[in-house]
Amino acid sequence: MGVNQLNPLIKDRSWLNRYYSRLSSFRNQLNQLGYIIERLKEKPRSKQLFATTFDPTIDIKPNMPYNPKMPCLVAIDFKFRRKLNLFALFRSHDFGRKAYGKYLGLGKLLAYVSEETNLKMGEVICLSLSAHIRLSELKEIQKIVKSI
Image (cartoon, rainbow, N blue to C red; front, side):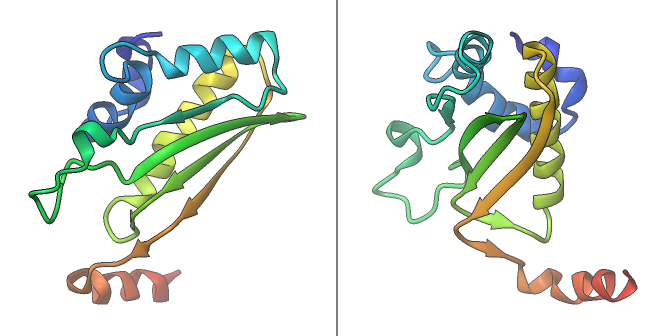
């Protein structure tokens, strides 16, 4: 599975650069998504369908108080229980600017893996360890919520 196959499905370049590349070529050597797809074909109820985007060798910068390239989405896990579900773990979750786009990307990823494995698509379930809205965006988001 290459970027070109999933590329038409994911329009957000940051998703491709920060997440997809780490999932498909971790440290330029391990295709975690390819492993998950093959494992799902062989043993769909496997408990080893986990992938990480967090790489401490590049994401932890002791001399920097803040690393803007550290991924917010740090891990995904697929579970097949009648349907294929995707669990996502976010260490930090920007609900003002980025959450919706990341949900769309995860949904497209689940659709892709479901199609590749011929498993019925289930749900995307997210766990946010630190969900936040920037103060500068709060009024605009309050307007949106009130209009719904």
